[in-house]
Length: 590
Image (cartoon, rainbow, N blue to C red; front, side, top):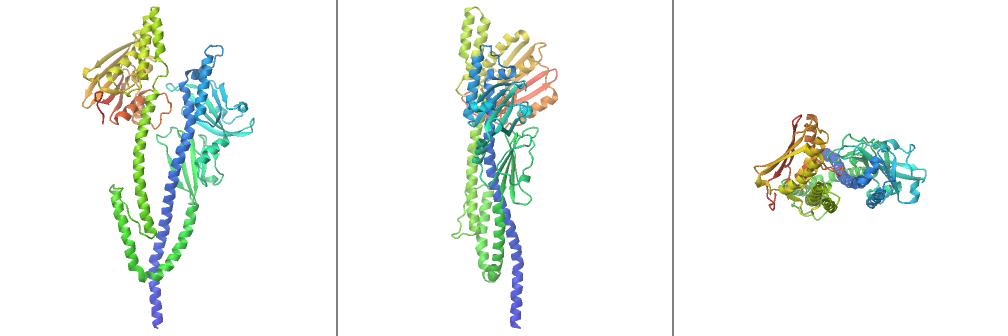
């Protein structure tokens, strides 16, 4: 009878202990899996970020190399109008082609052949790394031959195919070159790379057993590390407009045995899919189940004896960890915990907590330094886009020759243009003054008035106190040039009147440029205003010197409150206001 009672007490204690233990075991199993899933997602997301950055830089090197053709006027003229081999300038064209090819292959050592097509899709010139590659010929039998030579603006096309003449797999990159101002087609550039070199480059960035899949804008896979998991890679569709920031999507497959990352490369012209097999997660499930069953059996035996000791042993480090987390939530990332001498889950949490706080501090410092470097690089890139690329000394020589024969207008035009180039070539501080900017504008307007004679009239109204106000270089002249290009060249009827005024408004200086042109249509004006507010991640065209370029340079140097404001009314002209901080030369801007 006594033994039976003891048995009942034991069984009741076991059942009472077993219920919370089963609940706790289930929660532990769930939390363990969720924790590992989060860890895997975090690791995969970091790996995907590095991988997408490296691959994006690799493919954008092709794009930037192709767009460097804008720096070779003779080549773009050849693409637009064809090459005249009877012209004496053909030697200079050949030198330009040789310089361009050298520039491209030095930046992209894997390129084995370059083809330049003209506006009419006829081959204008080629370059081959070796004589055997001269056998590569594009024609109607080549995949995407028709589409690759007439791609939309900012679109590129990449694919691989088997070249029968070489019996090799080749990677093909194609881009159509457009006039950056009027979006008129110049021609197309086609680069060739051996597929094995492409695979070697991509595999050097990959960590097996991860699987990389690359698709072009047509949804065709032109590279894949492995054929495993064929149904997990969704067909890629290029968006109508590339996103302002590169997007990346990370999710588990339905069976939870695979982590899938999807992102866009090369201005959304390439779809990248990375598959991360979750073998560790499956193994963790098995290990967790084994641990749970063993722990339940063991804990039930000792729960009565060790509950108080275990409670005290568990709650104290958790309280310390919670207090430390509150400090971190309050912004103190220097808090650290001293792990216990023996290793268990709580000790590992403390070590992970210390690792997390250290990593957050490093990331904050790294991000701050990265932002400073990126800001300096963006300013330098935008500044270099509008620097002239020819010598003003030659113009001074031409002006001197003109004086000898009595052509004083030519002399003055050469002087004005030489002064503009001298101002552009200045290698000192990137900031100037309103006085120097006005001198640069006067030289430009003098040349335009010689060209258009009485079709342009100008009026300047600048307060004398503002003449020494500091301003970044190349702000006013691009805006006036924009007026001449979009108003006078397109609407030659009547006289174009340009009024430039400057006045102080509290701690700012407003430079106002007004014209009497036909104005801008409301829908186009709204689009331009939205474009000014929407910050660009990259400068794709490489040569734009329009409103957005000036607006972004001002904001990069002076901050968000400054920049351009655009107003226009049909039939009454357009007004552009430049807002900059009021500071004299030598003063610091905060």
